Length: 213
Image 1: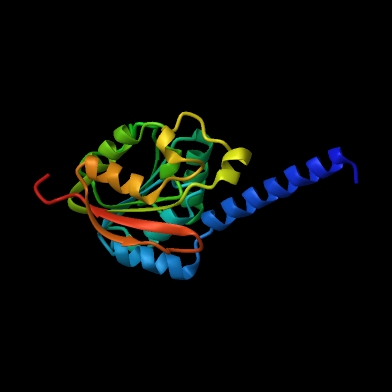
Image 2: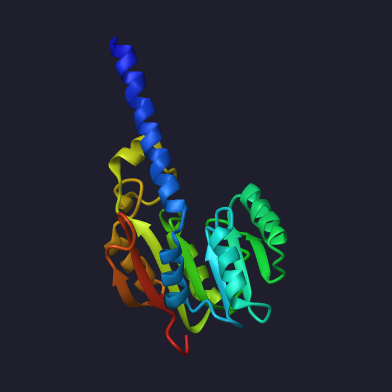
């Protein structure tokens, strides 16, 4: 094979690896869903949110669990994904799910509305984390729970899928766990738990908005 052929093959292999990594992160196993439901209290009557909801699979799962007396906000920055979430909710017969078009500063999210918020594989994409964490803090009720699932920087993913506008301290495509913890604490959250090995090579940071805040 020529040098050009080798280079093309390397790019294709790298792209396939990046696609597979993204697919693995998007798809939640039944065991992971049960863990999230326990941590975030997806129970009848609860109001919860999924920020960076993607196509809405987890938001729909949460909607089924919180029931008619509860509510789910599924927030996305991409209008196309917001539309997909709405169609998925309609197809699932859920009337307790609201798809919210937000932005990098968390605009559009309701204040003091949520008992729990999930961010799964989305936090490291935020170009203005200070504004986003402040919006998450406002959206939670006092005593509410925040769970962030993310992964340590991947240099190879930075080459194949570079992120634009994110802070320099990310160190690649991903976010160091200690940086995430610091940013949450700077926003006023109290860290209540860290699960270093959540699923595959991801971690989970659980935080709480202190009562009275």
